[in-house]
Length: 322
Image 1 (cartoon, one colour):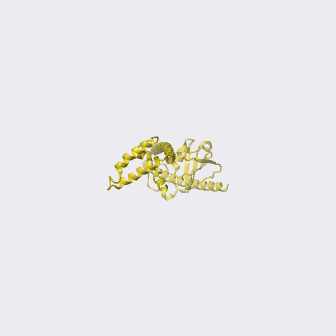
Image 2 (cartoon, rainbow, N blue to C red; image 1 turned 90 degrees about the horizontal axis):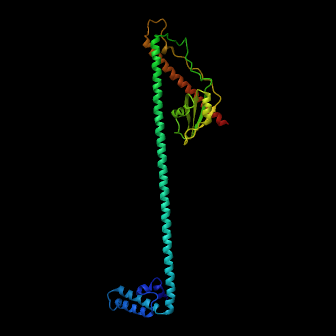
Image 3 (cartoon, rainbow, N blue to C red; image 1 turned 60 degrees about the horizontal axis):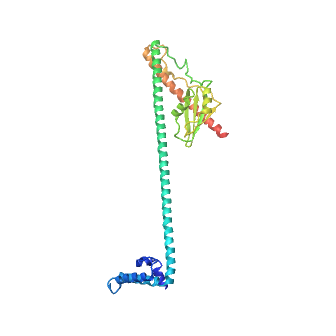
């Protein structure tokens, strides 16, 4: 019986015989005879599958023709069918849950991708606008400087030759910082967030901007912005925060230092020999004065840059000590 149980526990004997579970014993015997005659080993001596089918039919007949065994088998069959139905329903629920989860994941991925695209578009637009402002600002500045140079050359040409100055008669001091000017200390984290041009454009909306110095090390950048008006510097220190993605910390520097005077102008470079027999034309004098102005402007800018760098380093040291 154990072997029989092992053989039939996964079989649907009614389906094997081609009958319904509520059929009579007479129907079971008739169905068995019809199928057994077709696959009987004597009629199919060379077919091993026929013998196997015949033994399966014999097991079905033996079980279903015994009322008690048939009753127990029917209970097992119903339980197996109910289990199969539950599994089928669970599989359908699992498939639905899986489909819903995959749909939500796709929606989340599409939303994240759209957000990235929009953010990139906004950043690209901001970068284009900044580049446009930088180009236009440089062009306007160059045009204004060229206009001033033309006016100066025209005025010098009309006035004629003017006495040249020697190193012994006059030195060229660096311009001192106006009494009402002030300086701003700025800090930010992103190394590439700001440069001198951007800082100048940011603080120019508060007033005239003088020298702008950028210093620092990776992850801790700082700069010094000189404002010609102290009220403009105070206003900028109160409300300016820089770009939204790269905030600035702005601090008004209250203690300033008096700049040192610049070096005297070398006689050999700019003086005309006293009592000499050379007479410069108005055009030659204008050219000489333009060259002198350019050289002295470069010297003043370099000296001012060194002074501002010293101030920002001293301010960093004071902030670190607090």
